[in-house]
Length: 241
Image 1 (cartoon, one colour):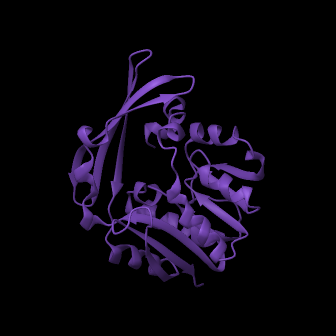
Image 2: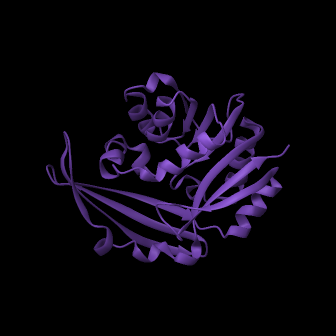
């Protein structure tokens, strides 16, 4: 688990450092498009998407392995309308949902091929027949990691109750489809410096489609991400059996 999600000090920065969640709008529209009254939000983090859905009357289950992130989600207004689970999609309780989602980096953060296929199976088991799994992944051809450096990402954000926080990301390793990087956070009020290391897997479209087909899905659509046109692929997979 990445430290930024499991460390309470860093989990508390997640929302203030990324306040614009317009990337979630397409998922909200797809929930409406597919008539999804019950949604499983895999890797729900601090609960932003789950709470947006719940506010629209959707029955939501949010699952995440990072307890610190879930603690933040559970403390938000309206959190009692969501069922929160600490864990991952490989070991879910019995569920029957209309749509399962993996927003933002969730799908790519499951870098191990075995864990990835187990996640797809877990989501498949939670979906009703005909239900949809929706997730995004960056197009490897766009080489997003080339912009992961201090010069391009450095920022200072005023965080309520914490003070100014300096942050930036730097690439640490590139090994085939695996891209590793480190976030650095400087709490200017105290001088404390924390870091969080992450690895994402950049899957080719054909690899993703093959994994979906092998797990019992049909690839219903592959869409562009409206907030990152030409840079991400949004997969819409339907449970066939």
